[in-house]
Image: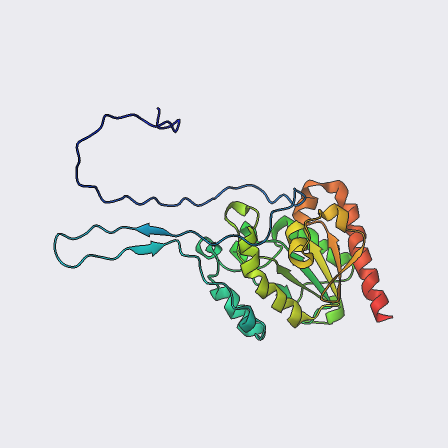
Length: 277
């Protein structure tokens, strides 16, 4: 009971004895199943400190040479942003599928690269895959995806990979792997995955970007301001007009904000129409 309360248990002094081999402690993983709260308080900075290392001590044999300690928990190597910057679509897709730059690769079923026309005039950027996206390998499926498709259809837009680029969208997520339990993306995960999204935008060369949800906004605009304060006006990403709006999953829980999201889509459509005039 005292141990459970984290109180030191007093024991009488013992006579000197050979020290026993240290036991190793396995680090537990945070698998909290909290929903993504799209309008919560902003996260802390995007960069995290260096990952600590754990060591596993192997049992020493009774004879023969000693076995060296083996490091555990070493942080995966980051994505080579310079190399990614030169990838074409096929090389980029392969790099995403093979990526092991963060721990999300250990729990994903598959990566979620993106879908749509490779030269679409519209680009929609979401947050992170959910359970259904992880199953199907495509962003915005299920109820949230159906709502997004309906909103795009009302503007004459589609996620189809062929056809007129002016009537198509390319949809991508900030993260390409699902966080366990649909928890919020962590800053280091967003940082390591960022080169893939940057290259996707460079390849698509969209004429308008729609950032859906808090983490998409943080990735593209480098701001911790909530979505509600950023929507309703035009921002810029690398010179491309960008409009902020709510994530469809949020809209399913907050029906009154559907009207505001529709206003955001109409604003984006107006900005694109004016750029063509």
